[in-house]
Length: 228
Image (cartoon, rainbow, N blue to C red; front, side, top):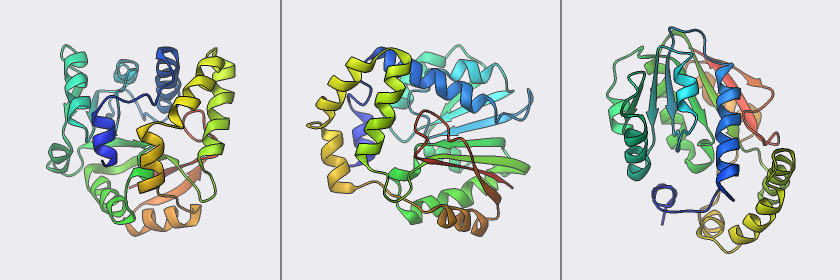
């Protein structure tokens, strides 16, 4: 199994429905701050279930959702079929889009599942797809030394604030014997130093800086804001 196959199938990465809902609500609130205006064309690349996409679509001109997992895309298409401001595209469809198609590209919690070569290739793609002055948000990047224990602590803190602490404790216990844990051990998650990410962004043609805070609940991870 690889990471795409994992996300394409049933998994218990969220400890319960409340966890999933507040996770996406928090993301939508954080990501909304980066939308440059009501006329913006936005790409959320590696979007996952995007449960709060409607909130994002209300503050931009058009939102494109893209995910590598076919089953995820089918669910997105079914959920947003009546939303003219939201479209769902496969990865290869995004790659075929013309230059300057977007004003903002969001890549959240994806870098850890990619090889360095894959990430470098995507950064070049996003540079092409962004209009002049467009921005790339690369978020939830894992630095070296931030492992499963730090992730668990961040989740428990988040859960305590948002009312699903005991479910989170049970969920972490399930995760310890889950396919996610085995994949994380077998495949690993890619980690990057801050300077390394900035160097890759510069090589792809961006002017970039570390952005604080990170998107979402895990502040042990990093976010970067880059301008074409």
